Structures are given as structure tokens and as C-alpha cells.
Image (cartoon, rainbow, N blue to C red):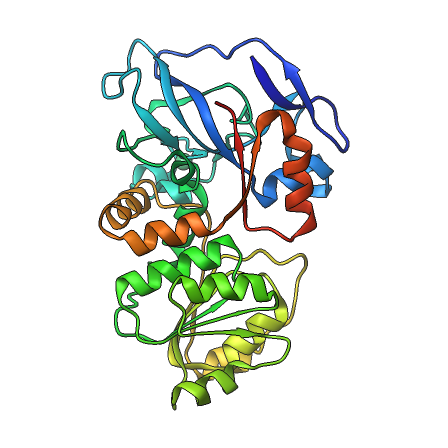
Length: 345
Ligand code: ZN
């Protein structure tokens, strides 16, 4: 089968003909139809410090995918060959304190598909049956490939109750745009989105933002004045990893405001702790998706909301057949893109 493999430490990838993975007794083998590129894949391609410290070669990368079940292990009773599925990319141990308490997203022994074991940029991927999410047979395959980042957006947006609240979202990349649509769906009052890319701001407006402002020229204080807001934002969703965006957000949170942080910064940075303390702000880090409450929430919201489905589709800007994988990586490296999807069918 075809697989996009990191063959040795260092930059680059190779599309190789490799042996198909075998399906263990409690595993499922999936014929990959679509796969999404993530910032993590770019780090792996370019081989930064994190990649060098994390990955053992050879390794097939890729963790955002949708496909069709090709084989199930002998102990698997709940999944059938032919079903269309997405996959949770984090495999948990099941035995640490958090796992045993049902908080599997907080597992301390998480193994990443496409990072620590062979992933989905291939014709077939094998994952534990517990990581398989069965999708409706008529789901658009492109949407199926978005469940990993859609799950990040859902996990972040639903971290705090947002019905009737004023929400600020910093960063209008694919996950910020999806979070905008979720926040609208759930019933926030005002939604203000910041970014420095006009293309991305336009996507945020289409997804339901009341105001999408260019942070290079407009502050959140200006946005509050435009909307007639007097007291500050109740909820902040940080999707940028940009210290300046975080500073602007913290400066406009209402007393008792709550902030969910998903964007990863490149390095340590300073924040105004005096303001966090005196305004009694709550700041919560977010990673991955809750297993599997986030997945239930995603499927339920998509089932009933055409605007949410449209917003998800809108973040896909590039589609390439798998053979043209270098162009897919070039698109994501350029930064002038939303979500990039590879077609492995
Ligand atoms: Zn665990």
C-alpha cells in the first residue's frame, strides 16, 4: 500500500510502497478516504526540536482522517466492515488515575496516532476499536476528515457555558472559524473574532461573528464600543498562541470572566497576572478532545445545524490527491490556507 513515511531523522517525507498494517484482536483496519493536514504534520515534516525528541523512525504520519472499515479484529463486536468512520488520534492507557476515573483526555500515557505509532497518510490505518467513531453513511467525507480539529474547537467552545454570554475568539484559523460557528449555534450574544488575515476574518464573519476585527489596526476595546458593550467579555477562546492577542483579550475580560486556551505559543511569554487575580479570571488549558463526550456533541450539533456544516466546509481551502502531497505541505507551509485535505481514495 501507499504510505507517507518519515524514513529517518531529519526534514522531509517519502511516499513509499509498504506492507499493509495487521489488525490485532481489538483493533480495526480502516481504508483511508480523506486525511487532513495539521500543524503537527508540518512540524514532523520540517523536523523541529519537538519532532526530534518525540518521533522514532520509520513512522507513517497523519492523524486527521475519515474512511471505511476494511477489517475488524476477532474481539471487536460493535463495528462492522463497510461502516464509514473517523478516528480519535489519541490512544489512552486505560489504567492511570484519570483513565480509570473516566477522564480519558487527561491520560498521562497518551500515544499519538501518526506521531508515536503509524498514522493515516496511507491507504490503510489500524487503530483500537475504542478509538473508532462510526459516522452516518451519508456524511460528506470531507467533513468526516475534520472531526479531529472540529473536536478541538468543540472542546474549547463548550468548556464553559456560553448561552447568552459575550464571547471573544482570538485567532480565525480553521479551528477559530469552527469555534465561531459552534458559539453561534449554542446561543452566545455577541461574538467578536480577531486575526491579522482579512481572508480568515471574512470566514469568521460568514460563520456567525458579529464583528471580526483586524488586530493590527483595531483593539477589542474598539469592538466593545462598536457593539455598545460596557462591561467586558464573559468568555474568551484563545486560538492564536499569539502573546499580543492574549494580552488584548485579558484586558477586556469582565470580572469573573473565563478563558479557554487552545493556541500553542512558540515560547514562554508574560501576562498581566495582577489583572487575572484582581478580576478573578479563570484560565483553562485545552488539549485534544474529551473521550468521548466531545465526539457525541460534535455529531449531535452537525446533525441539526446546516450553518455549522457550511462553516466546517468553508474552512477547507485546498484539496489534493495523495500523490500530490508535496503541494499539500507547501500550501500549509505558506500559511495562506485554511484546512488542507488529501484524497487517498
Ligand atoms: Zn491513562
